[in-house]
Each structure stands twice: as structure tokens, then as C-alpha cells.
Amino acid sequence: MIGGQVDLIFDQISSSSPSIKAGKLRPLATSMSRRSPSLPAVPTMSEAGVPAFEASTYTGVVLQAAVPKEIVQKVYDAVLKTLALSATRDSFERLGAEVISSTPDEFTRRLTRDLAQWTRVREKTNIQLE
Image (cartoon, rainbow, N blue to C red; front, side):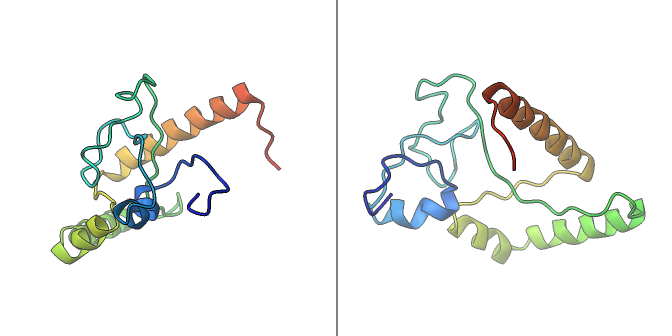
């Protein structure tokens, strides 16, 4: 994009943020349901005229389904403790990423919902996976 071969991209804020801050890229909209704390002046796609558009990336910790619930809880507690550290939050914020905590059940529901959504998109658009 910066080299001029591409006119438009969808990218993660954490990847584009340095180029945005340097004035090399101009953000038109974010694809989240609400404005990004790191780019508060940038409208969402819905605000920019594309109603009900939402597509965001996220990172989570995933364990095998057979892991006992007490181990899942220990890992969850350790992750929450790490995310509560100001150094951790500051690192994410510098990248333009937002720390959002959810329970293992909430994260499972989100993964399930997103998989169903993008499966429908693939089927409607006839995208072939290889």
C-alpha cells in the first residue's frame, strides 16, 4: 500500500498504526462495532455508511477440549493476572491493541459465532478453500 501498488487494505490497527502515525496511511474506518480507543477520530464502517459491518481480529488462549476444567481455570487465572499488569496493558496499547477479558465460555461462544458467520460468507460468495 505504501509503495503505491495497492489502493485500499483492511489491516489490523496494530500493524498499520506506525504508518498511520507517520502520515503514510490514512485510515478511513475501523471494522469494529465501536470506535477504537487508539484511533478515536476514525469512524466505524457503520458510521461511515456501511450498516451492520463488523469484522475484527482477536487473540486468545486455546487449550485442548480434553483439558480438565480445573486446569482451564488455572490458566485463565494466570492470563487474567498477566493482563492486569500495567506493563502488559501498556505494551498492547502501544501497538494499538485493546485488552478485553472474557471467560472461557464467552470466548468459546465468540469463536463459535464467528466461525458460523464466516462459513456463511464463504458459502454465499462461493469462496473455495484449498
